[in-house]
Image 1 (cartoon, rainbow, N blue to C red):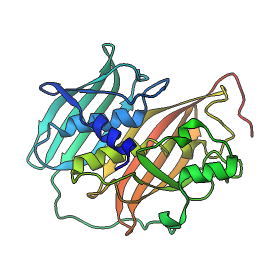
Image 2 (tube, rainbow, N blue to C red; image 1 turned 135 degrees about the horizontal axis):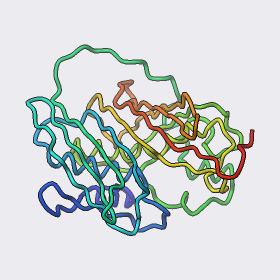
Image 3 (cartoon, one colour; image 1 turned 180 degrees about the horizontal axis):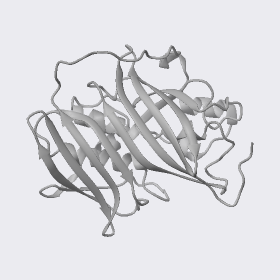
Length: 286
């Protein structure tokens, strides 16, 4: 396990404050706001720690306010329902006395059911694609310090990287992702790590058709909501194909949806996210 992944696992090991109340901390790095995937993953961990049976099968959540990366986050869990096969939890993440994030998660005992799924796209395997740092250095030379750091999630982009001016301006993106090391055999931990990783690239599909940069001052982007459906048990430390697309952006909001496939073709997770796509005192460059 890389040091970055080890630290992510520590971030997900929440401190128990009181019954149904947990505290999560932040990585020691400079950020203007807390990474949304971190908040979602910690909230799911808080919910899962109050569930006695079943695995998470869905979560629906809203990002309400920017998180303060200098202040711990409190997660309050409401045990809405404990059924025989379904368990439902509501989690509110709180900072400075105000809610910054709200999640409703459902857990289910697997049952015999109807079976079908869409086919996984045919793409190059992850071992044929160079690591992200090598690709960015090859194209841009000197790179931002962020790329030189260790990261808990290994990302292997299929085709051009999102920041490349040579990329095709089409509203989709595909990449392989996996945790950078071997994780313990804890299904909840694997689901939380995948939740963390899912917020790293999904928004990129919304931006892909546009000549927009996060740092040019003309654009304000943020995740508004995030929904996931976990179809099968999965391991976050094995390669997953992240197939994403954006069907529409309009009215200051963009929609993205994604699918995670295992290398054997099994569909593991589906997700949808809406993001703020606000132009600030500027017109988009065609």
